[in-house]
Image 1 (spheres, chains in turn red, purple):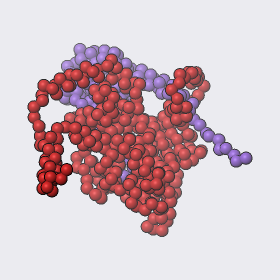
Image 2 (cartoon, rainbow over the protein chains, first blue to last red):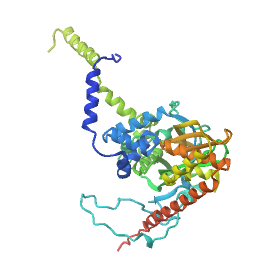
Image 3 (cartoon, each protein chain N blue to C red):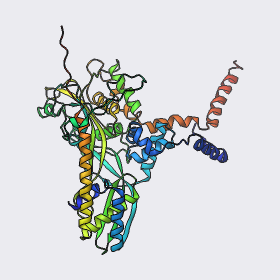
Image 4 (cartoon, each protein chain N blue to C red):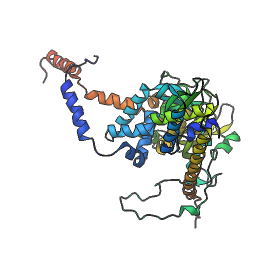
Length: 347
Length: 142
């Protein structure tokens, strides 16, 4: 039974929109959202798959803080803009570091840098006493450091995966299984943080066997570069805030008989570390065979992960059920009534 | 200062000074808009450290403008971050003027001033970042 469309209701819909606009107007300006709700803005950029702090904050305002809806606004806007080209590839080893931690190594080149974080805050809603740090007492050096896992990678201790010949772009063609790795990473990079966290969590709680160690988690700024059309030279366009995570899984026997460490990679726009960690864990789970549970765990199933983590899609599909389904439901009801009648008026 | 530095540096310049510079250039030389400021996207590839390949993390919103300054051959271009039409227009005019050799000193001066401000700001941020360096002590079993 297909969906039967409905028509009419324009007046009520118009009034409902006006009511929504008046009810959820508020006085907050997108600029205030951008400056004070940074993590929400970054989440929307990441899931909307469009780096624009300005429009992300407008989307949050338009959706009155419904973040799934806000990502929908931003994703829809993205599809209305022409794509001018491709920027130069970002290597997160070149990131200007703001925060960088490794739970694998105590002493790493560049050091452990907590950055602006409330990880170690007691999570109680209490008034804080301002800590008057004298910033001028600290050094002002820039921090650019390569991944803490680079030395292990250089020694050949880390499992490598096959590189795609061409980079897949899921916004043009959504691939079928077996999925190219570049498509898998693109899907996860714009996936919904909560869904990814839930799937990643299954791997730690008995439905998988990933107990990751965070090899290198970093947030910072990366340069976006493009070619000047009249000088043909490289030009810096922007600095984007981003998060990347390399998580280490476990030991795995390779086809050549060697044993290597498995790793997973996560990258997303904005300061978004729970999502980047979740992505890295899912990456390990998808590409590294399990030892205790076997390969049948939820988060090692490519179809399961790739078709269920997109917030815009899953929200859209879920919410479509509230649209009029009168004919569909009446048809089901009629089948039930007919069956009862056929059974001699079963009550 | 090179022409290639204009695009980013002037995005960060004091907006009033940039607008004044744009107006000065426009008052002295004809400016023709060949492509009005247009919001577009740039696909952003990221290096995957595990395969050595790349993947697209998403798109970056940019606003692009093309102008000619003085002679029609002297084209200026700007691609600025986010949805910023005025800014893109100002930067493209400065780019075209610089390429044509007009207002070079003024443009360079604004860029140098901006660079100094950016460096000052970065030093402040770096001090805060460096203040959070940590080396946790391992607890000994007693």
